[in-house]
Image (cartoon, rainbow, N blue to C red; front, side, top):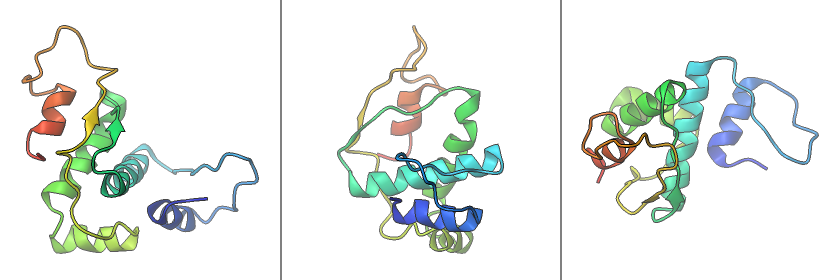
Length: 127
């Protein structure tokens, strides 16, 4: 029903298993949701290094983006390593190099080199 990372977040939530045909996770806060989404995304990238993805943009995605940056930038630091182990994000640091990026939410006309473009976020330091 859940990936390893999702399973760790589910157990930490102390909620009963969903009884619906579509499984779901509940987060007690927006910052925690951002961490959960970031870890789930990086877990997915580990499994699909050449996958196709459309990432969120805007203020609602800021916790996701900030957590993704932090996890990738500090992957081997003791703090992040402990956090990754706690939530089951194991294995090698994922690379975003092979991803196919569908920029459905990009603002037009925005230069891909502009600091807040989605293209810049993915390609900046991680490829």
